[in-house]
Image (tube, rainbow, N blue to C red):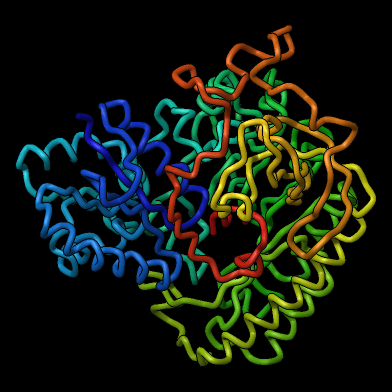
Length: 527
């Protein structure tokens, strides 16, 4: 009987992709997904270290699984990802029943390491070098790239996929642990990204999201030729059968005119840009070591608005950062109220060991004040988001149908394959639309008429009788759709539906305005 695995994922899109790749690698060696954690022969936690709360959840989960490990000594328990790289041996000191601790740079070793543990080889710790443990090149080599062949059955939906452009980060913001746990920034060759995209499209993918810690700093140099993100987008725009291209997360100073022009001019690139401001005060931005002033940020935002007047721009904010005064917080509030962000991911500051802020600045804003400021900023963003969504009422919007809404998935009785369910889709400007329709629309680009709006979602109806459309997999290939574009795995006879098996209990762990959305929230962008 095949061994069964269970994985829980905390954090950003990079972690979601890592989990997909780890599970796909284990599947290729004969493992299968368990229906519940209780059925699993191996349980993995892919972790995040951006905030203490994320780590606390993992240690709590490890505490809960202790009894299961005692009852089944052969159960393999693994901690993967950023917390593994940060805490290393501390994890087994706090939870000795953990068998496997693997950092982001060693995830490709997981199948081999698990085999060794099952063969009696004992616990294993595999992590990369620290940022000060050698030269930049030496440290970078210890963070090995991990982008093997993809498995379409391992994605939440076969029609959308993350594609990594680079790993690591060299920005060293004072609050951020990512450069320590993800290592130096390293770009992937554009040829590898293109090849992966072609393969994804052949498997039925219609939309890709390029991901990097600061994706718009992408640069690949070979000989005298340098490829930047704008160049890469132009190449990807030419991939036949691909409908949409997104990219996250952007660093404000790297939002160049050629990149903005590429978003404007390339038909497949979505007019949706996540460019975190983090704060509205120059003095706070200086303490954060963000590398720009709010005036420079607004100049960048102005260039986006001029070239892309209808683009959806989203941001991140941290409240309660070291030394934040009432006056400084008011500047952040002013920015949210005036910058017209579609959405903002809003966090309370969490001091992280290994960062400059942790070493040199006092976490001196009381927790009660952080909570009040968080709530005020969330409420301000909700007002701005609602004002931005209301003009869509009465318009016709094309959406890529992603699957059943969260409300629909919570229903006790599922609709029949031909029955009507509440579905969710996303516009090119990243607005979520919920509407009633048959499940055969999943994976298709359809038009919806928007009938109402809330801060986080639009509500609509399917336009022009498209609810009567045949399923995507029933369409004959006529040259416009490549083979495999049905969105169904060649090993599956079932119609495409949104799979939540891999990411069941994904602990996004985000303190942001849209955690309480009535529809499916976006995975939080990389910090």
